[in-house]
Image (cartoon, rainbow, N blue to C red):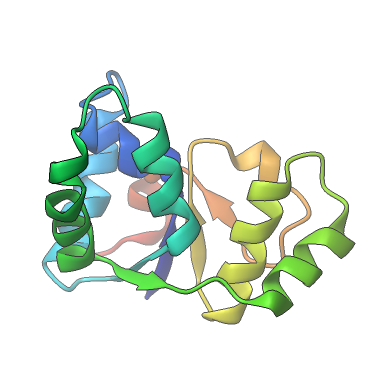
Length: 138
């Protein structure tokens, strides 16, 4: 199963954000253990560094990248995805880019806490909790 992990889920784990940490960490761990193919966009990494700018020193950015890329495949951002996202005319351009990326990598799901923002996505967006209640089987 191929999952595109949205920034907010990754940040839940990196910043230990409650009450979302446990479910987001469980998705992270499944990807880490190889039960799912976890992807994150290169754009997500820049967003994460920006959001965590007060928590992470510049000399630790490479450590953060190693941590994320050790678990998730970091997928590039293409001009076609930017064009596709622009043509989607969504209110949130970043989410449109994430949707276009998920489509390109043939993701089964986008894992996010903001599922309403992906209502027009060709790849279904679900929360970490929904992934475990509706999709994941042992």
